[in-house]
Image (cartoon, rainbow, N blue to C red; front, top):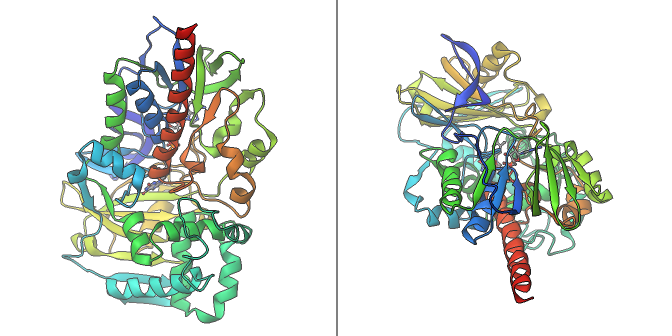
Length: 491
Ligand code: FAD
């Protein structure tokens, strides 16, 4: 099945919107109206899929409403000529507890593969800055980045272990809040004298790869939180952030959640159904879709992401702190572009081109069925492009990562900035948002619960955080509805 989402360019067919994915659900609607629904879940990303699955398995009757034609939300894979290009969330790791529990539960440990393969080809890293090009081994790349990062994160003289001793409880040490009031630029200014030009360029590029905002709009705390989650080392971060992916793509994982929920017989669903409004009427919640359909249940779980939450009307209106946070939003406007190139030596290549190019960080990420190299490239808001609007500019941004080596056969991407159900990529906090609003974002609103990776506590902004949040919502409602069902029975 082909999703409306995503774009593909080839020399033969030009630019086409929509790419095939096993995450597209057909038929798109399955509604059982024989009994009332216990819970409506809005959104079929990992938060929603986890909540739906856990509640269906527990015997609750659940209705899933999703704006798109597919599951997965910001994590989905296209399947082009048998090859899964990851359009959004990709990499997972056994140090991510929620995601690993699911990988293990679905017996998918053997489905993971490494993105990097340094066994053949160029096997080097290229750093392109305004000062020139430096080619180095991957060991030298690691050492350059590790040295810059260690200077950057060492705000407590203990590589952040003192500041963030419990990464799954980020503000455990109240001192950490101070760093949420600083931007990464503030910190760069503090240590600028100690950085070599190459350290500074690669460090900035790495930080911007994580936030895809600007140096001014990236919370220092949130970056330090990632570092702490990654085990307080550069290698740990690389392992968790960009190393291990599913051979069959993210959609091969997401579909397991959906199918398990469906097999219980407790799931109804409607795709292609953007929600317009959500009304908590005290005894029940009523949701209206943009095309005028109405659905009612005892409770509702909204997994609508932060940057688009204000597009849906809530009655009673959202409290001021949450509403304010949705106006501020997160800063991540990642541009992720896959390029299939004929140069086989590029499989073991990695590169940073910073700050002049529109894409700044790229790695050889796989070999396609045609034997070509798959390179994945990242850019962000600091030097933003809308890749489908000017395909020549996108091609030159790809080429700018390794001039003379990128013979582009195909481009594949999803424009997350222009996506009306995301308006951005993974959550990354600007200064103050977390310390001012994280607690408010996690609160329920009467019969409405909010679950999204954007306000998870641990691996916030990752697939792991989405599963953490879906689990939290389902657990709350299973307890609540089970006790209300048993108190009804006892009367
Ligand atoms: P979402 O996936 O956003 O799900 C929310 C759902 O709500 C969507 O399906 C949306 O369509 C739906 N929705 C929104 N508005 C409405 C409406 N009005 N009506 C009905 N439905 C609506 N994470 C990792 O762990 N590893 C990575 O390598 C990684 N890389 C990433 C790269 C990119 C380019 C992106 C975009 C994300 C990446 N992430 C990564 C982050 C990860 O994808 C997300 O954190 C996670 O998928 C979010 O899941 P969620 O269910 O909380 O939210």
